[in-house]
Image 1 (cartoon, rainbow, N blue to C red):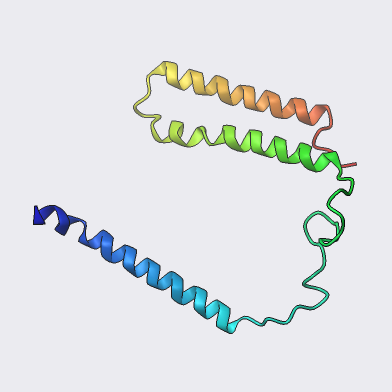
Image 2 (spheres, rainbow, N blue to C red; image 1 turned 180 degrees about the horizontal axis):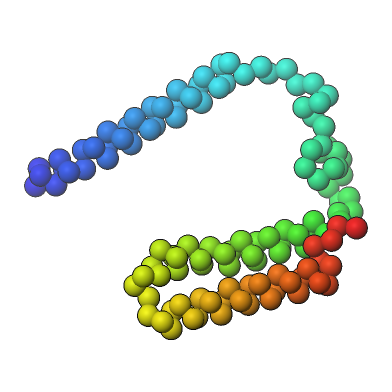
Length: 121
């Protein structure tokens, strides 16, 4: 029974080391950071709206469109990693199925490009 625990000992040491290092780095960043907010730090930098206004401001729908398109293509591209890793073990049907999937991604990308969904103006 002790042999099983001995095999996990390096993982336990690594886990303890990681936790201690995380606390040290977090503590050092808290101690060494300057805590003086100025007007430059408080300005809006992501979407262009002031951060402390009414939450019911009108929001341009193009932000949502770009975000949805990014999520769609980003999630679909994540299917490429397992396929690329196991490509040597896949039968020819797996290769052509993924080739069809990539082709559909490319057609979809050109379609949204053609209809102007990626244009900001």
